[in-house]
Amino acid sequence: MLINRLKKRFGYDYPIFTTDIFDCMKGYSYQRIYQMINEAIKSGFLVRFDEGVYYLPTETEFGKSIITVNDVVNRKYIMDKGKVFGIYGRYVIDLNFLVSYQVPNVIEVITNNESRKVREIEIRGRKVVLRKSRLPITNENEGAYTLMELFNNLNMKQYEEEKQIRDSVKEYIKEKKITRSEIMSVANAFPAKAMKNLAISGVLYELA
Image 1 (cartoon, rainbow, N blue to C red):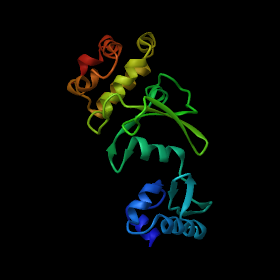
Image 2: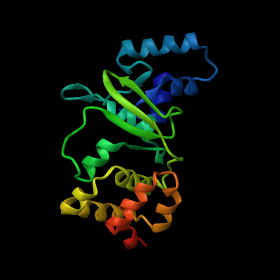
Image 3: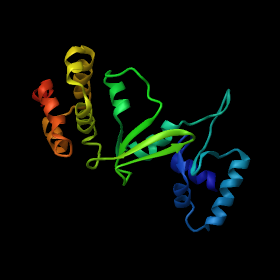
Image 4: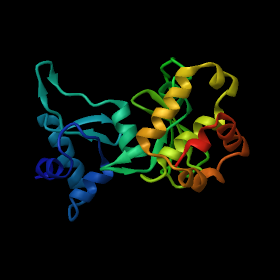
């Protein structure tokens, strides 16, 4: 019963939290639910990835499938079922915009799902830095929010000297279809230097 309900709602290889299981099994006591969880783990139908995190595995030629820490972070702090409520932080932003080529060891996210200004946690031994969003991040503003985060931390001399950064910014704006009004809707939540850098770059005046 437990596995069928989880399969119907989440499918395979998708992070499932304890709260999700409680929600799926309403009407059963916590004791009984934990008993069903343990039985499902022993039978191999459910895998415990980390404390409070599970998934339904598929069989591969190498054995049972494995989800990643990024899968868990993405679902809990970035996006779930198409709804965006966070973005990856500075290190990933710098990597995506070719400001840096160093793959970060630490996962940093900016999310609506954090009440403290900054907090560090570990997921399966991997360090994750959570930062409270400056304003609610949504499907409509995540592109503009990401761009403002970039320019809030960007070295403008590097921006002027490295064409690949400028090209990546232009491509991102085109891909996300970011408009001036979207930028203005989030601008007040950022330090003044973010908008100043954006204006200096000339990007602001290219937006629709």
